[in-house]
Image (cartoon, rainbow, N blue to C red; front, side, top):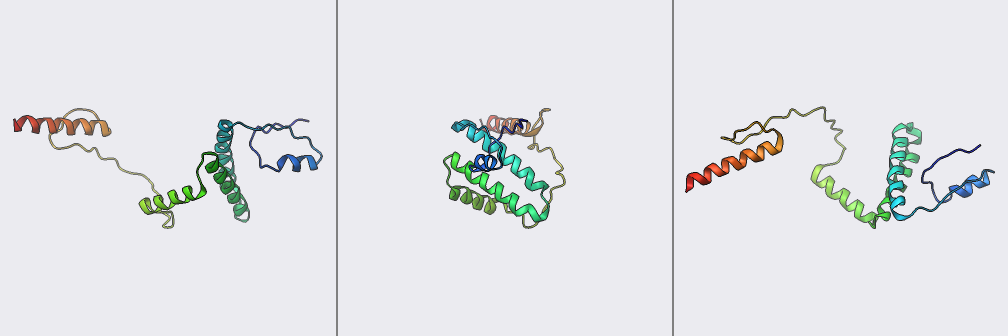
Length: 141
């Protein structure tokens, strides 16, 4: 009976499968397919970590870490590059130690004084700013 997997596996998996008396059929991916397969593998491992009981979480997180390291290397990034970016983002936005859970955000429409129009969002705001600046420029002439 054939069982299809169609996924990236660790380097020693073909030997482990063969040692169990089964016959794996594999291929080596080109760079673009490898990068895409690593991204898919990251999601697979993240879902497994999410579903893991506490006693298996460390093992699943180790799998996520392995994929992250391979993905960085596949994109010519060093692990130090990734860690440096994590440190930068933590300094800029914080970490998760405070356990803050964002429920929702009330969105207020921002419109500069004197702005007109029915446009909404950032584009409407920018149009309003342009109109206000133009009126100021005309008044100064």
